Length: 99
Image (cartoon, rainbow, N blue to C red):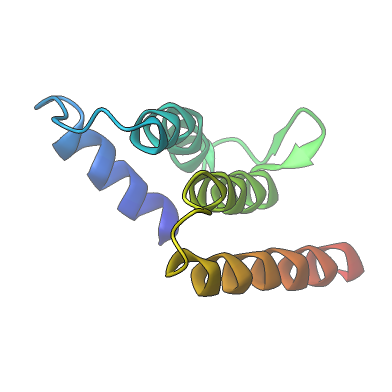
């Protein structure tokens, strides 16, 4: 589902152009392109570079969120979201590696 949200964002927002010129928006938009490609490839391609595409998509999506929040670290309201995102990424990694 996270991939579909990114795909919707990519298809609706980026072609219209973005009025935001902040670094975090540019980084997020740049990281979103490989994420959308992973989301599209998830069904037809089961393994990419020796890794399952679902796992690769999960880790890339979490990396996108964490990098974006790290760029906003100077805003204290993002700290809670960053903590939750890191916890989910770690717990997801542990769950995927134990599988």
